[in-house]
Image (tube, rainbow, N blue to C red; front, side):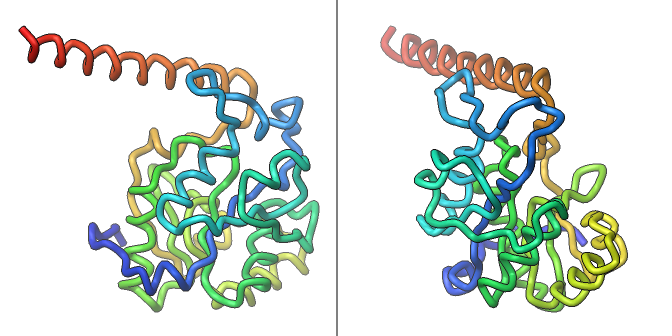
Length: 222
């Protein structure tokens, strides 16, 4: 099911707890990737998804999972992951149990996800209240970018108990709705070369935009 361009209501947004998953070990990266500074502005990688969620939900974004102490002050609280070692699935279940309502989940290593994409997902979730999960989609489902409702708890418990931590597989078999999101917004940075390539391209994009703005101003002054 595709997304809607309807703006979600403030009442519905208030019912959702926005969260950023930060409990990963960054094994493929080789060090804590969430604390890597982005070349163009010096922000840490984890600050981008926090900012995207704050732009929609306000300053009530919580981190989920164990993270470096320096990251705690960048968000608005921390939710303990009650199922460490189970990947994103454990973090999602922990946040659902703590909040008691729907949660918006965003991975800490998704720096290009923006407020518009957050609103698109929230808008569909408000319209389709029967959906258990509403997540982003490109050529595949992105389980760490979307809304999970309390109705997902039972299946999450069952899969965790069986040792099946594949969150994406759960969404393929459940009552899931998807929202098409531009692929460049869904970049997920797992390795150092991916991060540095993206960081350089982001700097180039911003520089090109700034130069175009200056050129337009120069033209207007002539």
